Picture 1: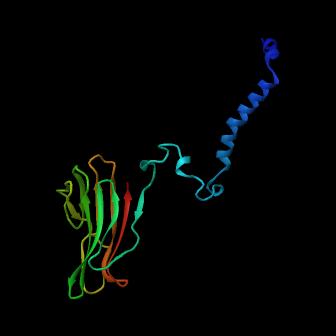
Picture 2: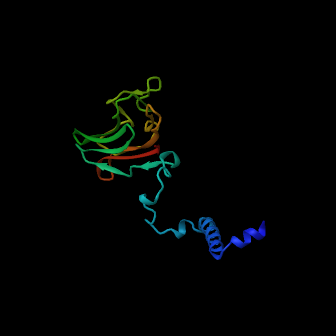
Picture 3: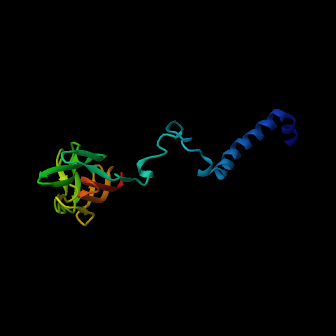
Length: 189
C-alpha cells in the first residue's frame, strides 16, 4: 500500500502538507506569544472583533460618573442603562440654600424593580413605566454638606433581567465652589 501511495505523492503534496501544519501551528504559536503588551493602542477596532465575542455578560461593567458640579437651576443626565435614566438636579431654594437631588426614571413601557435606601421601598420595589423615584437622599442647605452615607445606595433590575444595577455615591451642596455636587458608582449592565 505504501509503495502505491508513495508513487502518488508529489512535491506539491509535501509543500501543501507543510503549509497546513505551519498555518495551524502558527496561530497557536502566536496566541501563546502575543500578549497585551505587544498589541498597540487602538489596534483592535470594532470591525476586527467577531460578532458576539464581546457581550455585556462577558464584561464586568463598572461606571463612575466622575465628579459632577451643577449650578442652581441646572440638571443633567448622569447615566442611562436599559430602562433606567439617572438625573442630577440642583434647585435654588433662595436665601443661599440649594437642594441637590438624584432621581431615577423608568423610561420603558414595562414595570421594573428599583429599591433605594432613601425611598425605603423594600416591600413595594416596583417602578412603573414613566415614574420617577429618589436614587439618593437629597442634600439641602446653605452650608457645606457632602454625604456618602447609608441613604445613597440603590438596586435596579429591568423586567427582563437584562439590566441589573447596584449603585452607590455621594451628593452635596455648597462644596468645591459649586451649588450642587454629585458622584455615582454603578456595577452591572
